[in-house]
Image (cartoon, rainbow, N blue to C red):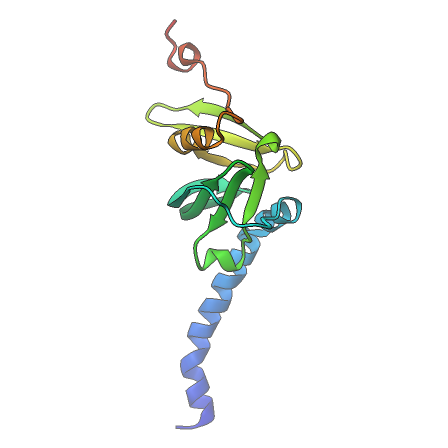
Length: 153
C-alpha cells in the first residue's frame, strides 16, 4: 500500500471533522462576541445544572448547556466539544433582565444582557425559577399575565 492510498483512508474522516468544526465555529460566533463583553474570569462557585437546553447568544444549545449561578451572576458554559468554540460567560445580575413567555404546554424566559441587547437568549421557565432562587433575591424576571396568555380573566 502506498502513501497515497493510506492518505485516502484518512481524507474523508478528516474532511467531515473539519466541516463540523467549521459549522460549530460559525454557529457559535455570536457566543464568542458575548464572551468578549462578559468573560468568565473566575469559576462559578454556586450550583450548576448540566445537560440543559436553551438559546444563548443566538445558538440553540440542546442538551449541551451548563448553567450556574452564584451571588455575582449567571454562568453559561457548554459541554465538550462545543466548549472548544464557546468560552464560558458570566453575566452579572444587575445586567440581566428576563421576560416570561407562556405557551400551551411550556413556558420560557427570554433573557436580555444589558450590553448585548440585540442578541437572542432564552431558557426554560423552570431553569429561570432556579436562577431567581440562586440569586438570593437580587434578580427577578417579569412574569407573564395568565389572563392574557390563556384568554381567561
